[in-house]
Image (cartoon, rainbow, N blue to C red; front, side, top):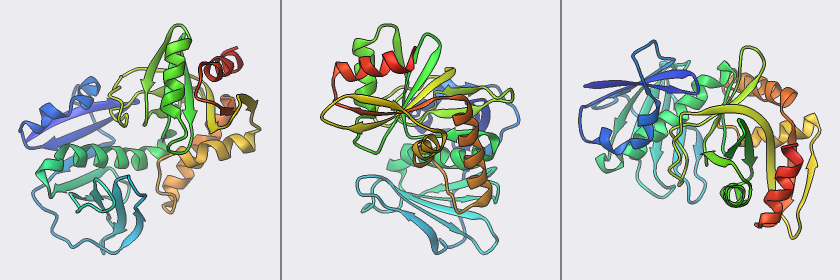
Length: 289
């Protein structure tokens, strides 16, 4: 077995699995590799999980997205199954302790090993770190002058397109992450946004972090218009984009506290926009003042 350690937004996780060529395929993890230290989560691949899959408490089966089920074993452990699409066979089963600090997973389809490992780590990381003032979110993030700008929105809204428009039209901009960045409220109350090993269809795996300067929720429209949100509107803006299992009280409380800490420090906006350069320029003038 091979065991490696990764620093993701300041939280160290370990991954223990066979020493095979699958490691070479997981290039997204390489920038985050770090020295051995006490992990907040231990991920361990095992040959098989003995217990039967329990009845699911939740089935996430949005068309075109991975199928994930969440249940609990009779011993009180969490149990997850995953498939690459909602009509595909299950390729991974995972059992986790009550606090998500240890996750043992079984790969049923070796051809889906990379998918299985990445999705197990991404899901459990979100659940484990939510009580640690950490929010894993579905968003695209641009860096400019040491500041981070987060773009939120429903799938298909144009988050990646808007980031690309910034890269093409706003000087001195870089992409930090295009799908799953991590926001942390630090001990001093400041808020930072971090790159992660998971970035959707865009291979952008950067171990960097910057001060979070603004959050923008995108909405498609036949015009370009931006408005600052009130604190309650900002909470509602950020809440749907956070990866979490809200029926679990500790996770839900962590998400609530994390969002509250963010909106106290970071302005949030709603951008109704076209997919054009003018939208990026308007957004930049407003939020990077």
